[in-house]
Amino acid sequence: MPHETPLIATIVAGLGLAFIFALAAQRLRLSPIVAYLLGGVVIGPFTPGFVADQNLANELAELGVILLMFGVGLHFSLKDLLSVRAIAIPGALGQIAVATLLGMGFAWIMGWGLGTGLVFGLALSVASTVVLLRAMQERKLIETERGRIAVGWLIVEDLVMVITLVLIPPLAGLLGGHAPGEVAPSGLAANLGLNSIAATLMVTAVKVAAFVALMLVVGRKVIPWVLHFVAHTGSRELFRLAVLAISLGVAYGAAVLFGVSFALGAFFAGMVLAESPLSKQAANETLPLRDAFAVLFFVSVGMLFNPAILLQHPLAVLATFLIIVVGKSIAAFLIVRGFGYSKGVALTISASLAQIGEFSFILAVLGVKLQIIPGTARDLVVAGALISIVINPILFMALDRFVLRPERQPAAAPKAETRPEAEPEAPAQPEAQPGAPVAEAAPAPLPEEDDIEVVQPTKLSEHAILVGHGRVGSRVAKALHESGIPLVVIEESQNEVEKLKAAGIEVYSGPAGDYETLELQNLAGAKWLVVAIPDAFEAGHLVEQARKLNPSIRILARAHSEEAVDYLKGLGADVILMGEEEIARGMIRDLLHPVESHPGQAA
Image (cartoon, rainbow, N blue to C red; front, side, top):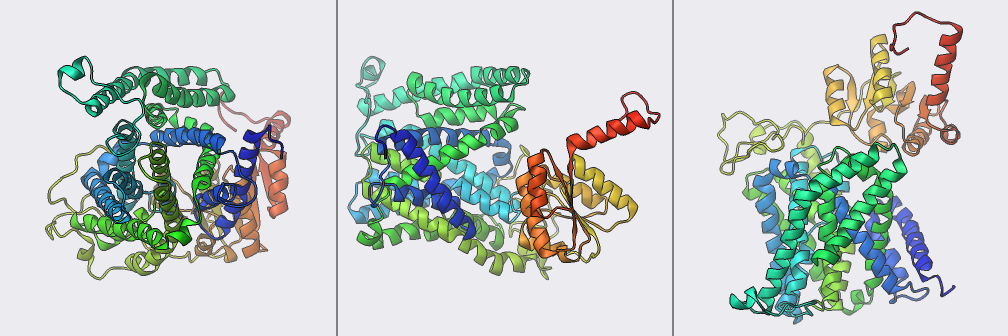
C-alpha cells in the first residue's frame, strides 16, 4: 500500500470495514456503533494486518467530535427538558453520582488514584444518545411520557458531560495527570491568594464565560442572520457550506481564541443555530457529513482498544459491564420509582440507560491524553460499551415481552399506574406543555394512556393501504375515504395521526416497512398499496416487502427521477407516477381540452 497516501488509506479502510461490519450488525439487529468499533479494532495496532495511521485517525476523530457535538447542540431542546425537569434533572444527576461512585470504588480496587476513578466513573455514567433514541423510536415511545423522561434525562447527562469536558483539562494536575497550560498565580490571582490550580480554574472560567457571552449576545443574532442571507441566495450548496463553516469555524475559534474545547464550541454553535427557523434544514444538510465523521470517530476509538484485555482482565471487564448495566439500571429504577412513577416507566428508563457510548469515548480518550487514566481504563470503557450496546436490545426484548406487552392489555386496576402521592379522586393531568410549570412536590399523575395503547390488527380486507399522509397522501386518503373504499393509513407524524383518527380513518403510527407492522395492517388481504412517501430507498424496501407478502396486491408508488422509476419497477411496483410527467400531462390536457377556471386556481 502506498505510504504517501496515509490519509486516504485510513479513511478508505475505516469506512470500508465499518460498512461491512454495519451490514452484519443490521442483520443481527445490533447498534451500528458496535460495527464501527470493531472496524477500528481490525485496523488498529493490536490486531494483525493493515494498521491505519493513528495520528491521522485522531485528527479525523476530532472532526467527528466537533460534528457530533454540533448535532447534540442542534437537537438540544430546553422546552423538552423543562417539561420533565422535576424528574429528569434530579434523576440524571443522582444516577450520574451513583455510577461515578461505583466507578471510583472499582478504581480503588484496581489500585488507581482518586482522579483516575473520578474520570473513569464519569465515563461509565452517561448513556449513548444514538442507542437510546434508536430503541425509543423502534418502539414508538418518543412521544410518550416515558420517552419524554428518557430524552430529558439524556439532555441533562449531555449537559453534565459538556461541563465535565470543560473542567477536566484545567483540573488535570489535581486529578493526577498532566495539566496543559497551567497558569501561575499572578496579578489579581496572587492578590487573592489563589494557588496555581485555582488560578487556572479562574482563567478557564473567565474564558468560558467570555465565549458563552459572545455566543449568546452576538452569535444568536449573527449566525441566524448569515443563514437567512445564504438561504435567500437559493443555492443549496452554499447553504450547506455555510452550516459546515459555522460549526467547524466556531469550534476552532473557541479553541484558539478562548482556550475552550472543540466540543464546547461546537455544542454552542449548534445550540444557537437551533433557535433559527432554518435549524431543521441545517440538520438535514449536514447529516451525511456528520454521519461519515461520526463513523470515523468510532473507528478511531476502536483503534485504541486492545482486545487482549478481555483475556488479561476478564473480571475487570465483567465488573465494568455490571456497573453499566446493573448498577446504573438499579439506580435509575429506584430514582424513578421514588418519584412515584409506575414500574413500567422505571424499567423502560433503566433499560434505556443501561449502556454507554459517544461521551464515554470522548472522556476516556481525553483522560488518556491528559495522563489521568491509564490505557487499561480506556480499554475497559470501550469493552464495557461494546458489551452493553450488544446486550441492550436483549434487555428491551425482555422488557417488551414481560412488561410492556402485559401493560398494553386492559388493566383491571387502573390505580396501579398512578402515582401513590395522588389522591384517588384527583383528575388526571393532561400532557405537560413545553415550558409549563411542573409541580415539585406531590405531583399529580400524568396519563399513561399513550404508553399502554392497545395496538390491534386491522379487521379490514380487500382494502387499500396508504403509506404517508403528506401533501400527496392526504389527497389520496380523502378521495378513497369519500368513495367508500376501506382504507388503512401508515403515518409517522403524531399530528397527522390525530387528524386521521378524528376523521374516522384507521391509522397506524410507525415504520412502514417493518414486518410486524405490515402484518397488523393485513397486507396479505389488501387489494391496493399506495406508497406516497418521497424517499425512493424507503419506498423500495416497502414495495419489496409487500410484494413478498402479497404477490397479487396492486402497488402504486411515486418517484422523482427516471432512476427511481426503474428501481421501484424492478422491486415490483405496478404503477409509478413521476411528478414532472404528471404536471406535463395536466398542462397538455388543459391546453388541448381547456376548461374554465379562475385565475390562480389549481387544476
